[in-house]
Amino acid sequence: MAIAHTTGGEATGKGFYRGRHTYVEELGEKVDNSKDNLLLVLGPRRIGKTSIVKQFFLERNEDETDPGAYIYIYIPKIKNLVEFYEKAIDEINKSLAEFSKYSKLRDLVRGSRLKAAINGVQDTIKNLSIAGHGITLKDADKWEQYTSLVASLRNEFLSVIMAFEKKKVVLGFDEVPEAIHYLLKNKHGKEEVELWLEHLRELRHCAESKDMITVILFGSVNMKLTLEKIGQTKAINDNFNITVRPLEIEMVKELFWDLVDTLRLKILEDNQCEVNTFLEKMFTISSPWAIQNFLDKFRPPQQNNQLKEALQCAYLELFDIVGGVRYINERLDRYYCKEGNEDRIKMIKILLKYFAQQHVDNQIEVVEDAALCAWAAKELEIDRERYNELIDILLLDNMIYREGSGLSIKNTVERNFWYYRLVGSCKF
Image (tube, rainbow, N blue to C red; front, side, top):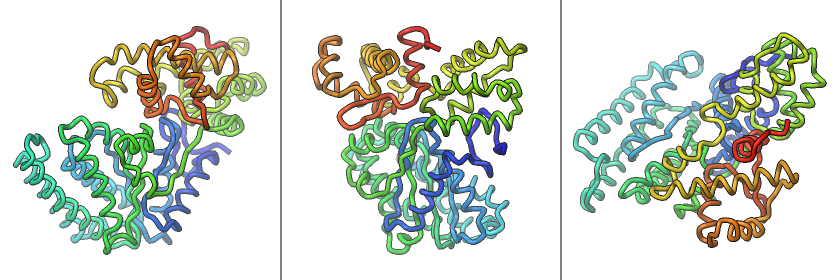
């Protein structure tokens, strides 16, 4: 049966494929039954975290028997807490516009109490911005004044949530680790991150709201490692985790052929054996994003004998899609480092080349950390501290993953990308 979406976008909607709907169900079980009300959705970039959360919210908002309101909030870049609340309110307003299509939530769109609460937050934000608070904080007195003001802003934000008058309000904050790294660039960055996480804890544990609010945090940068690096182990321990993993080959095939059915690509349907052989070699484990965009880039050839070349071309074009495979320079400048990036990039590429060659040439799936460290000390002439810094960057950006005492690249497309870029032929 064809699924109800095509290539080039998020895999959401009624036909959300079975390979990811198990995570939707797990998320629902955690929201309904867990005693805590903080969930972390973990996993690499383009693996389906946002699609899973959005699909869960869609199904719950459509469900007339569910007593809750489910709100997606996108916050990739915030300079301070004032901007966080401003973006959160903007996203709530967007959700209210969408709620009109759900009969159980239409009253919220018209509710004067909710509108009044939202207007109150917006007025406070405007006054804070005019006064310059949260824009440039140069001295301790101003910082203390600022923290006091944003505490009142947090209370007004809570009043917005309470004005929903629902038994359950679930807030899904997307790109949280990215937002943390942006905040850390501020003069009081670490203090502001700690204050932000404390605000989230207070929202969740407030006596009047703790049984109503559930917070879901997710994003592309490694959530757990980000929190560990800023000493926020409580935030890690005080939650339930859902880890979204790459698709195994059988699920890759299921999604691929459902998409082919949707797109009516006859030349692929007529050559299933050849296409499956290609999938089994190039998509052993992969992200839904890679499969969808592979088909988006596929150009059906005129002749069957040109199919192999068309498949190869589409696969290689995956590497040039913005937002997919990793762009080291951009990520380093944006999140992790201030100086010396050129040297870091050179060393990171050497490490990635080593990983890719071990995977592709030697079929070694997990490179032991001790062996890799010894190799890096010899080949890169770096000490353990420098090695740990480079590995942390790779782990933070989900380029590699820790498995027991070793490290690996999980996504077949990512692995082949680095092999192709740093070694040579993709070995089709």
